[in-house]
Image (tube, rainbow, N blue to C red; front, top):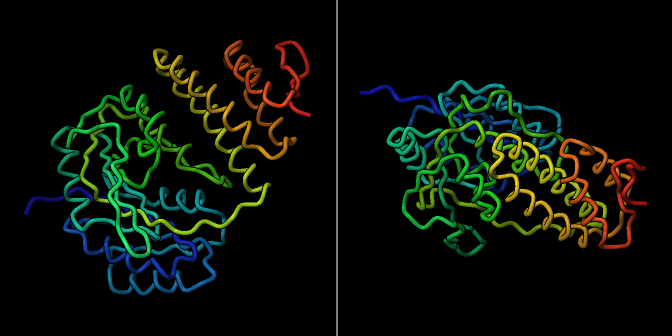
Length: 314
């Protein structure tokens, strides 16, 4: 039998005792058997950690790491430090995957000599499963250069997430998730794409994404999420446009629209946002200043000028 490349599968775990068994069953029973399964219990206060240990006793491919609660980004980073495989994948612990997912994704990876393969997904509700054709690509299989992929990245959120993808491990190059963010995949995926030469998109829905009732956010939590999104968009603009100058205008226009939209969503303006503005003062003189000035018009905030006080909001 031909030797199969090892796939490292990372599952960050936190208080998902209701769902973790279904997730792990879908991974240990994959038709592709050569897996390194890394479970990172991020200080769960329910039985999630014990369930992980139960699975590890039955399957030698599983490694369990128990750590104090540090957040999802830190848990994923712990897993990334342990990967040994040619490829890697990160699965959310309340979701599950088709039993043939890795077999078919590796096949596509080899067929097209690609660095990333991504699939579609189905949304899982309490009483039903719905196929969502969240894709700007309609062919059953599409091969993309990184520049083309980064264009789709702006209009199709499926391109930004990590959980519907299989990555070549060599793409990592010390890329890690930010710690302490409300969102983290948007800071991570595009950097791997920038390191890739070829990406394959398949319209087969191998991933089952569980739709859980979200709790109501208070204003502080909502603002924190918006700040993180703004930070991500500006960081992504600078990162991508510096590497692919032809995409600068496209990313600038999207950044501008994004800032204007989210400015209207903020319930109050805080020092934290001022600090965020200070983070990106002169890296792209003229362009970011123009964006932030447009951003500032919404509620009569101060204009930011290149040679004046950097404080944009009071």
